[in-house]
Image (cartoon, rainbow, N blue to C red):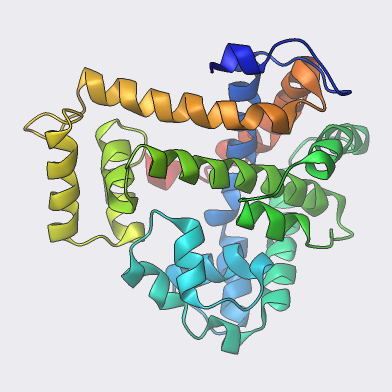
Length: 292
């Protein structure tokens, strides 16, 4: 079944949605969520709990919605990190319980959005929520552990942080769906990192530093992708590899059609316009300059 088949006539109170609208809103959601991993406010909040290293803080902040889970559960739901990377979060729940990590995350988000001057008016924030809230409410959460956990988190009183949390729910929903597609295509946790870096979609230095796959594991993943014809002998992505990567993205979009059906094509496109303003503000503030 193709994405075009899934986006056919509206039914059951849902509106038709075009394939490119699904991709557009998903890209905008991801872009408007990501600043939390790069802003100084996040590190400052972690330092209050005595956690100075970025890795353990990242895992604690992002998995806090699930409660005090062992690091192995975080590893399973995050997928593309090595066990040695995620194991570093051991002890973070002793530093502070998950609910305090979650509250600190909201504080960091609100402070950062105001610092860079996200220029959404109160009316536009309310409009974005009017589009996001029915999507979150109608979503099917079976097999979506990170999305389900975030959907269960009480929204903060800060309107900007509350908007961001609803963005987080749908961002993690797509992420949960993406892991299913990766596994279906036999793209293992290290393999998907290698393919992304080879395709120029993920800076190599950041991938190696944050995901912490060692040289032997990276080389083995590279060899597996080469055997599939997805990488050349020099490690560059082949036409077949690029096509395979696009199939993974398209199939993930197909999973997301029912998610966005409650607001349809026009609603998804309008939401994308609003959310890009968040990304634009953080880009203008130099938030991602270290990734260039």
